[in-house]
Image: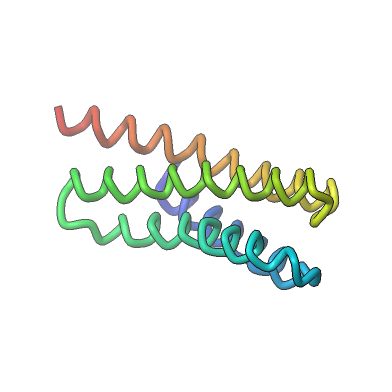
Length: 117
């Protein structure tokens, strides 16, 4: 997969996260929504930033940060679903996007690391 696929998918994911968070209306859920928004939008921001990395090592580091943020996003998505803040369709859609991004990030990190050997 090309890096553009990863950029496109991560932007689509960020839009989905923003829309999800905007739809959370319960005041007691705002702390979870804030955490989800930070982690979820950070994924794409780090992938985008990696495109202008200063070195291969910097590129990999930014992708690894995006990977960590995607794992954190999965946590917040699951917590919001299990506590009934979001419905199953929303959870499944966003978690599927997150999983696809995570797989692409793992492959991209592996490829980038191997090319520096």
